[in-house]
Image (cartoon, rainbow, N blue to C red):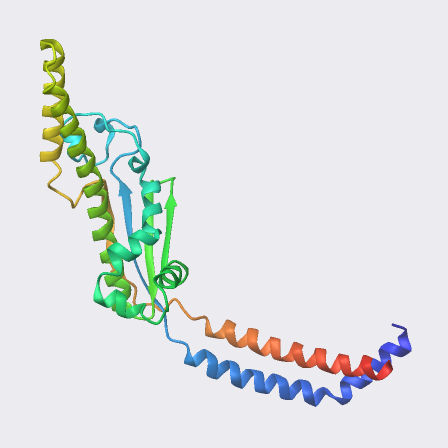
Length: 263
């Protein structure tokens, strides 16, 4: 664009500056009403620490637990690693079988047509978690328009996650115990029979020590809490973005009119 063309373009915009002002005013009014229509969002959270790590020895556990008390080596496996156990937390199975069975959760997500959409909404809009490996702590939080429901979901997740991990180990140990008892009943030699009997006693002791679910697998560093401070929506940012978009849209329309006239 030449200098004279630029001057002509500037004069054209200046003559129609009122359109830009009107678009800015209308966008601002719309953005204010829209921002005020959004519900406040609150957050509830908690902090957890693994009691043991994968393939670690029981003596090295932070608080103990059934394996520490029985001085047995921890079994290795996918769910020995606490971070991997969080994969279950984000799974569709956990949402449907562990959370959606509660009426208050079902009522909160009944606006969606399918359970899959409800689950995706839960992951996108409600659930947040992160792992700080420097201090070995997991932070988990729930965001929701209802402060009470955010706290309830946080407490519910903690309860259901504990029960899931406990049930997983309980089923594993029981299956292991039954297979050993069957193996012993097959007529072993004395030395092997003694060895298998000792293993059976160890498994029975582990199962007996699994009664306390409160400190099983992890300990609660910071119990579930609800923050009274609003975390959203960012109404000022929303107003600025909508107003800017309205002005830019009107500026584009005016520019198209100018270049269309020149063509």
